[in-house]
Image (cartoon, rainbow, N blue to C red; front, side):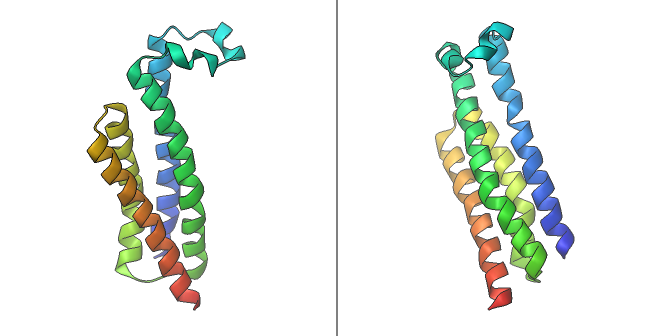
Length: 134
């Protein structure tokens, strides 16, 4: 059962790295160069709309992993044996990947649903781990 939590941690971290791709594409489209590296935040206004959304999406991916990684580690320590914890662990990276597409392609309803579902999977992992030690 522990393998699911380890895979969730690894795949969720990979999703954060995948979120760099649309961000990089937006910067390339806006003409990002070495000169812009001294003030990358000042370059934000030059990004196309999808590039701006990609920046926000990437920042949100970091926020998400900062909540999900401890939940996975907590589950690796407490080893909950429920099917819901396994399903939550494995569905989180998939939901976050769909979230990236919904955010970058500007589909607000889908983005909100994927965000909320991803957060719910993390909350479930915390709950399941806590119930193991109580």
